[in-house]
Length: 376
View 1 (cartoon, one colour):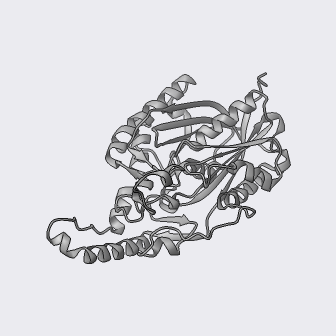
View 2 (spheres, rainbow, N blue to C red):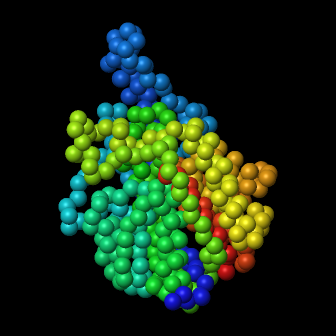
View 3 (tube, one colour):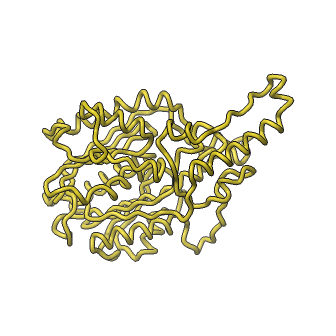
């Protein structure tokens, strides 16, 4: 039976990995790899059998994305031109996994803000673009590590995982299935980036965000009431990651293989996703009898500064000021499903009681999720 009680986002947490990589460092590593590759294949390149690789540059990265830095779980392996992927130490089955460790830190911060204990949480949703393993579920491991009751499960809707996870939590709470649910997003995109690909080697950073979502009758401090949700998916091959449990069974494959890394047709994504997001947000606001100007803050998925600026311009019909649609790409890069929550985490305290905001994700699939909230 539905409770009829408001559902509230009462706390957020943010965990940063220990290492930070600047554009300058990334470009130096990439261009060293390019020099080595072009020298090693010099004869084939001169004969026209292979194409010489093109250098990257700081100016190219900043113009294409707006990204200046990114956090990663390991820096040494990524910047090694001979490796160009993280160097992670395998963990035994009885040790906390990397995603569990990241999640616990972000969750503790979110619970502290909401003035809750792990024992008051009766649901846990791990929603992110890539899971460290298929089973046992990451959520079950995190639930066990924190001493939470109830249940936990994993879900993946790529960069929209967070908003889809919030909607699942909202529905469970609204239907009186739970009293308090944590949605956590331990994102480690550096594990599936092809750092040898000029067009994408700079895009992603690692991070973990967490949100406490609960019924209004259990909150201990004012938060943001969820007043509307809207989800959309539409299949597209333009953003893809083929990594999966069947890879080792495929004939003729080797490891590492760029086929199993992130790849996208950036121009098509830019052209197709922007109008989809604009239409989705405007339709969602219309369903709630709201105008774009009624929303004080838009916390958008942080994929690309050019996309974000154009989307908000189309929605508002004018250029947005920095506070209306905060950009955190410069500091964190694209953090997959966590981007909009990082923006929410950093840019919500200045809003006044009654102000409206909209959290929106968009990504591979294609998938779009939007959450309209009101500050209590």
